Length: 225
Image (cartoon, rainbow, N blue to C red; front, side, top):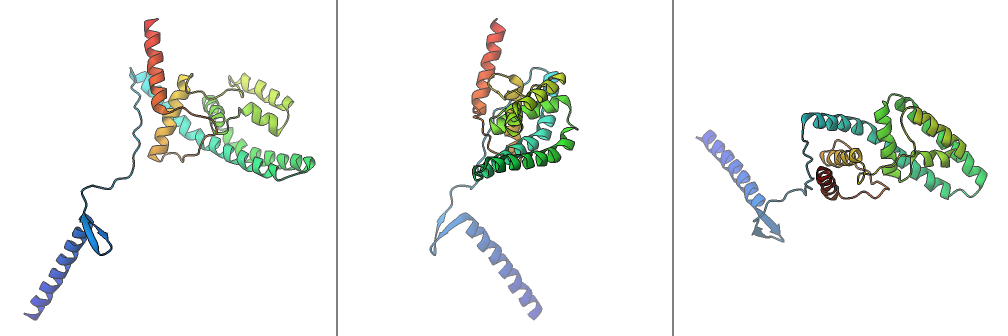
């Protein structure tokens, strides 16, 4: 009998505790008082426009572009962070010779950090990276090399890049280049899904909904021609 009573009291306490939790979940406690909740608290979610492809081939190309964009974006993000750090440090250095010496140190560091990894990139991945560096820094790769080294070396790098069908002067323009629009769509959705960590771009990027309307308008105009 005593065992049964203990069991019953234990069961009742457990039931009362769970009921208390349920009551607290449905009420807001405000200074020893409570009001009934008539809403469910949810995290804010931004809905992004969906691109519809007219055939499977275009979808496959988009998915290939997605894989390459996700692969190279971290390099562009890191380049932007390193540039911010460099500029911040240079602003605190007064002597011109000290600035040159520090710039060379950063240049050697960047070359050591990036060279081996960048050698593994394909031509198209390199093209995407050039665009994304422009997106993140608002400078072309050509301009960055020119600032870190000198004009002659920038020209040499650009000629070398052209041999591989790449231009270091290329800019990121999702409003006028469809591939860049697809890249921006991939980035925004990857930020939202957590596949990529967001970093604020220095370049002014149009809203994705605006870009979608713009490219739909372009498509309609081309059909009428």
